[in-house]
Image 1 (cartoon, rainbow, N blue to C red):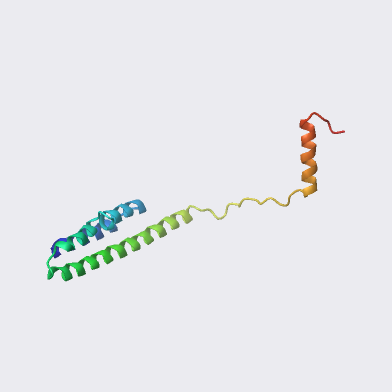
Image 2 (cartoon, helix red, strand yellow; image 1 turned 90 degrees about the vertical axis):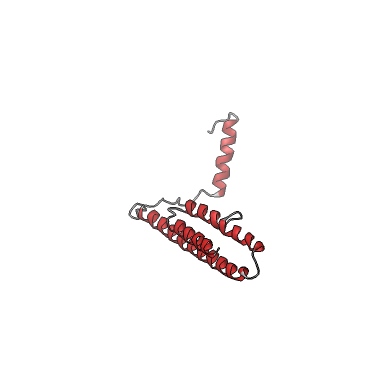
Length: 127
């Protein structure tokens, strides 16, 4: 049993290291740590183990879960950093920025323009 759990941990770590993007990493996380994941299935099997096997398998299970969780967090951080650096590499800082609008009309001028617009729509002409 311990051999199967060790193989499961090694296969999970291998898949995590080969994850190319965050979606692939999430799929691997769900496959191993999700509700119906492989490591979670081992936790459910703990009920059927003998009293002598439980501490040994429980310790290996916790170590495997912690190792997989740490590897997922490390890989996610590495993928985020790579994505951020590629986005920054595409940013040209020598291009001019967007120009901000300077100032606005006075509120009384805005009301006067609105009133003139209303009277023009009603058919009046400005003299």
